[in-house]
Image (cartoon, rainbow, N blue to C red):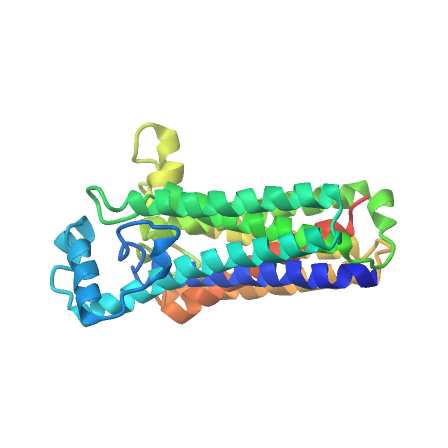
Length: 339
């Protein structure tokens, strides 16, 4: 590691941690049904929360004009409203904090000539991704303010995947600045690079289906394991028309696919570990594979427990946290294999 790079590396890694934090807060917001409590979007003025009883009553009256209150929460008290408002407010504020923490040090390092033109261009791309994430978040919330008090599961999945893309891209830039061991294995083992990339795509697809399951509340349908109500392949998996719609809108099918990808990732990680044992890996690469194998096992166990105990908040959040950490570990492993 170059001494001049150290503050920049720390800055980027802190952004990664903040993105991870907002993913966790977003998960809590979703699981506590708090995401529709703020019915307007004011990127600047929205940072000021209600400060007195009159302000709270005003915000509460706004909430009453929308489907979630009218169809689901018509008995909610102001005190109960404050608790769900808190998580959505925290989620939005954390996103704004990331924006400021990305922008202000970037300007400082640029003025001090610590960043070259190529890195500035990459940072501009990351900042655009972050802004797009905020816009997509509001676009997602809007889908639950029209008729049905539930956000679009398509938009929810896109929102989560974009957050992971931002996390992965920021981590990649930090790793680019860290001078580690030689990665000659990346030149001599192209097949392992391809396997690692395919495995990362598989993890991303599994996280996508996790978001679809969450958005549809499909995890409440079959809470037995390993069979689904006594079936290896449950009935009515293809009851929607056209046929492809079952892959995204059928509660039974999406839970089945989420389970299936879980098994596939578990066996794939074991296969990668066995395959890589025969290769002359660096110590960092070996540690990455062991970490990924352990994380996959932990994630699988958490997924099963979350399912059979019908999604308790603690287990569900732990399941999401390990998924994000696993994705970051896969990014790190891919980076260690770069040419």
